[in-house]
Image 1 (tube, rainbow, N blue to C red):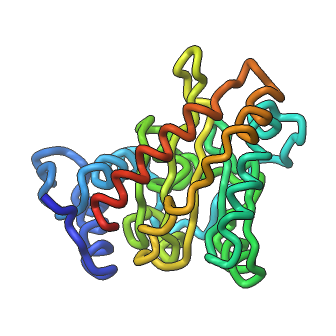
Image 2 (tube, rainbow, N blue to C red):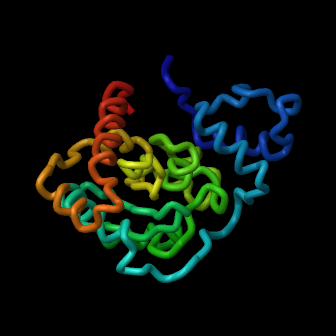
Image 3 (cartoon, helix red, strand yellow):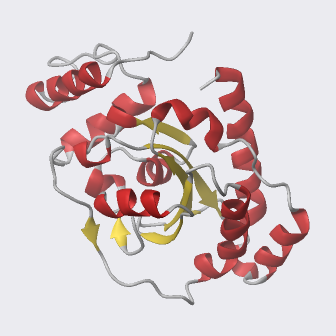
Length: 236
């Protein structure tokens, strides 16, 4: 069955219904508001944590440590991906296990200004517990890849964005170390986020070898390749 496609007004109405009535099964039965199951689960968590959908902005946590092991290991791959996406108006984000953005790569100045207005930048908290449903935080929370389009974001400040995120796991322990995410300005472009994913095995290995204890790069590529195949089948 195809995923439901709701207009921005319908999405906002569904979210407001959940906020107004509460998250108990009696007040709003599961699957009764018409949104995709993964989005509904995330919305319910956000409502239960009393996250404000109309919050003005993400919260700044602190400046980024350039020696962060995850950042050191993943940066070469993120840079390479962004080079391959030049001119496509796609931004690439990396977050740590707490949902704090530790890297943002964006090529277009207009896109950069738009993301700045949404406080989607290094140092800001995009965890689900802080901002509600979003590609970085929800991927960490659910431990699976996630698509979030426009009004599916819980925060109204992110409604202009569409994103696709995936958790980054340690190959040895399976522990989630953070997440990686791609943002675009138009939810119709979600299908293209996971296209043109580089298959640069030597570069991937060099990045992984920078910090062996955080050997997550290979698994992340398998996750993204898997999501790419799913996305193409769904024709998102």
